[in-house]
Every structure is written in C-alpha cells, then in structure tokens.
Image 1 (cartoon, rainbow, N blue to C red):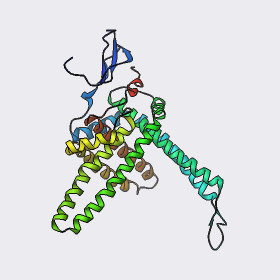
Image 2 (cartoon, one colour; image 1 turned 135 degrees about the vertical axis):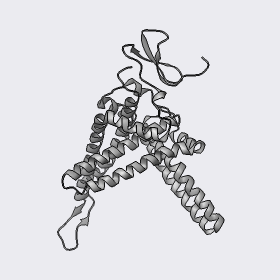
Image 3 (cartoon, rainbow, N blue to C red; image 1 turned 135 degrees about the horizontal axis):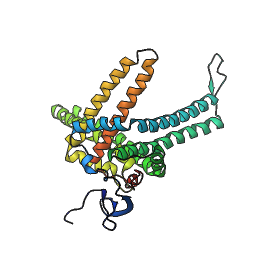
Image 4 (cartoon, rainbow, N blue to C red; image 1 turned 90 degrees about the horizontal axis):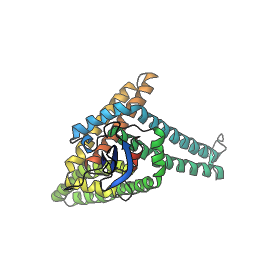
Length: 312
C-alpha cells in the first residue's frame, strides 16, 4: 500500500463476504456482513465553515430525538444534584425566623449532601459528555445506536473524560492568567505596547479560545493517549482561520437564537417551552459544530464508537 487509509469500514481481506473495521493503523476484530453499504468515513467531514454549520443543522434534524433523550437524562442528573445541594444548604441553617436571620451551623448530613451533589454533577458531566459526542459521531457516519449504548460508552470512559476536562479548564484559566498581565504591561509601555497588546488579544480571540473550545469534543471522543489540548492548539497555530471560522459563525447563530429565545420567552406559558426548545437547538448545534471541527483538524475518534453502531 502506498498510503495508509483513514479509519473506516472496508472489504475484509480475510472474508470477502464481510466488511471489517480499519482503525487507521491496523485491522480490528470488528466485522459486519455485507447486507448494506459500509458507512461513510472522512467524506462526511465538512470542508468549510459554512458547510460545517450547515452539516450540523442537518445532523441535528436527523437525530434530534435521541440527542434530546440524552440531554433530558443529563438535565435530570444535574437537577438531582442541585436538589441535594439545596437540601444540604437548608440543613446547614437554623432559626430562620429570628430577627437576626438564619445562623450557619455545621451539619454532617448537609456536608454529605454537598459531597453527593458535587460527585453527582461531575459524574453526569463526565458520562453524558462523551455519550452525547458518541451519538453525534454515530449519526455522522450514518449509523444508529441506542441511548443506552452511548451512556455505556460514557460510563466506561468517565475517568478519561474527567481528567481531560480538568486539564482543559486549567488551560483556559492559565490562558487568562498569561494574557491579562501581558496586555496590561503592553498598555503601560506606550504606543508600541498597545500594539503588542492588541496583537496578543487578537491571537487569543481568533486562535486560543476557538481551539480550546473545539478541544471539548476531543475530550469526549478521542482515544486514550491522544493529547487533545496540544492537538487543538497546534491546529490553531497552523491554520487559525480553519479553527476560528466555524466557531464564530456558530457563535453568531447561537447569539441570534438567544435573542429569538428572549423575545419568544415573553409569551406567557408557551414562551417557556419555546425558550427551552430554542436553547436546546442552539446548544446542540454548537456542540455538533465543535465535533466536526475536531474531525477537520485531524482529530482521532475512539474506535469503540464504531462498535456501538450496530454494524460491528
């Protein structure tokens, strides 16, 4: 072979009547009978910012029911964690009707509930994040998979997701800590310093923020061993337009939908449901855009996702 093909389903060299999954480096043990054409691979990755956003809306339209199911489960988990936190807070105050107001007291039960709330929130985040991304990837390659299978994928990889998420949040925070002092120093140094500060701010907005945002997709679906943050920042350094174009186009659409949501929210009762629907659409489409962006920069996808599509 003159070049190594990208990951995908191909004719099985050992069993011509079947397809076999190639992970980009070697053949895996996953096979599928030739009852239907193999799912598309890299050809389904958009090549421009407008195509990326358009493809995100298309994928959402095709799979919104299962994505809504995953989102609803995540919201229930977050709500349960919030209830535990509030109950713990209530138990930590006494004499709420005195003139001096409630007094904070140490409540062992309250502390336990706070710990439960924190663990629950992190658990939902670490499980449902990759589950959501797994469903998006299954939809992208034209295959179906159950909500339960996606949650199973998230459950098996929650430690990896949580660790990457912590590193990503620290990187976001570090970027602020580095940028702000440099900008302030540049302003103090005069005209040249102001120019340098503008350049640094521009680079931060058009490269660093979009790169770290698209890295959130890699956090959930990249295979073990992939350096998600480094790959995203490297892509931004090589081609900042590719990284930032779809990000800001999708962000503008989110802002537009947010304005529409605020206006519709003024309608009594109906506005509440319309607001929730618009928020779900805008959030999901934005996440799908970052998923496509991860693939556009050559980001890897955990081969285990292919095993859940019903073709493996």
